[in-house]
Amino acid sequence: MDSSQPAELQNQVVEPEVIKKPRIPPFFVSPKGDWRQLVALAKLIAPSFQSQMSGRFLKVTVGDELEYRNLSHWLEQTGVEFKSFMLKKDRPIKVVIRGLPSNTEPEDIKSEIEAEGFKVAKISQMKNYRSKAPMPLFYLQIENGAEAHKIYDFTELFGTRIEVKPFERGNKVNQCWRCQGWFHSSEVCHLPPRCVKCAGPHSAKDCTLDFNDQMKCANCSGAHAANWSRCPKHPNNAKKKNQSKNKNKNGPNKPKNAPPKKTTPQAPRPDISKARKVSPNLDYSKVVQNQIPREHETWLEPGIDPQIANYRLFKDDRIEFPHTVTRGGTAIYCKNEIVHNRVPLPATPGIDATAVQIKIKNAPPLNIISAYIRKSAQSRFPSEDFKKIFNSGSNCIIAGDFNASHVDWHNVKNTRYGISLRNLVSNLRGAKLVAPQTATHLQPRQRFGSVIDLAVFKHIPYNHSVRVLSDLSSDHYPVILEINLNTSLIKNPEQLSTN
Ligand SMILES: [Zn+2]
Ligand SMILES: [Zn+2]
Ligand SMILES: [Zn+2]
Image 1 (cartoon, protein in one colour):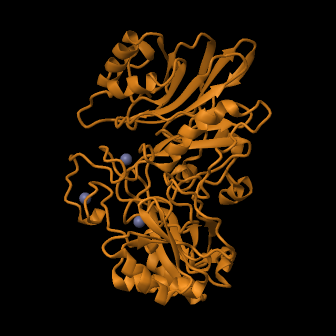
Image 2 (tube, protein in one colour; image 1 turned 120 degrees about the vertical axis):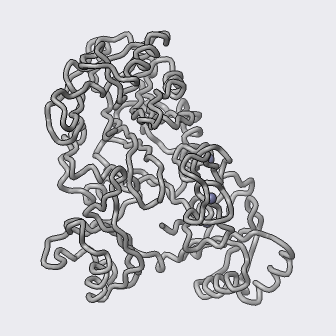
Image 3 (cartoon, protein in one colour; image 1 turned 180 degrees about the vertical axis):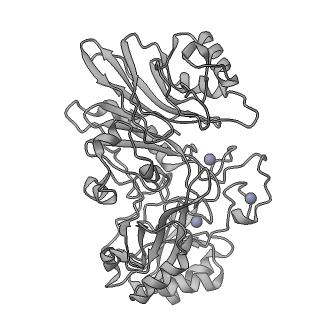
């Protein structure tokens, strides 16, 4: 994982002092036991040692790289609980290799690259979240050094054309695999381990939690995994609250997505120039039209957020184990010129959802929600979750893969989900189900497709049209939903990859 800039402790009362350049990362030490003795001894190791309380930690700064290394080593040897950040020059270069067959052995790639003088600190193959099948994508960490950036010059491996791309974190916050804290990585974490599933003092691989057992979040104690992106303690969610609080202060001429005053360096604004480099062969107009070619779906998986010029991406990755397995989720691309902000949603374990509120002209604020209704083992429609999303605003459009078929919306048969959804919508005030006329999903080995990519409107008093593009690039067809606000046709910010 990434070693991040020192931007620690959102809730601290004391503002951190201005950090001198060149930047030597601070240490955050748990002041357990006789901390005064610890300070006295540490000063012998690093004479420039300075400390002050910051949250529940003693924040320690030292003057130079040598002292940083010495103190780091000493703290580790002494068994002190602490975390820090990597020196910039120590941070590995993270890349993804595309173009090799998925049955290539990572070890072979490693030897091949090391034969060229690089040092591979880590290599792993990315996997499909559903099938767990290995994908033709290899993630590598290259040890930093003067020549390390030359890794990008590789165009061929084993006589086959490849691409080496920077691994982009996008706007994802770095979370520690060891203690589940944010903004630092496990390599520099010496805090007690906390399990991502049960918050216990062990690593996830030693967890005894059963598949059906309730999880416990190490950060908020809620019934979810600690790496869930919608955890109320997650820095992005805390930030979003500030954002909506501040949004009225922004004048009409200010940028629509001006960051809140206190931003974290880990959540950079989308860098379009870099993003274009990530996937130059993506046809952006197609992305916007929800026509992601199948082989590009991988780019919507966790940790890789494709950016589109003039659009802002909101994305919630589905959380499963282990961390390295790629999986699904929901996303919305919103055009920058539309006044918008993200809407935090309550926990809905049965539905993956991403919500953005948009304001257009004199129309009331509209919540656009990209949703994927999960198939549950007991095939019980998550009605309570759906109501929570439905109640996220007074005017909503919830759209996505609902996994629900009913003859009322042009299917050949009713499914349990379909019957539940139909009943639910007829009982919700102001709700209206919007479905295309033709199949949106192709069923393997079945003659008819099904209409399961749907929308539910809440108090949307405008004309609309919905159509399916018969572009076969996925098992789901792209669906275009247009809302006619007065005279102008406004395209709903498209949702992506809910299948
Ligand atoms: Zn940690
Ligand atoms: Zn556990
Ligand atoms: Zn939590």
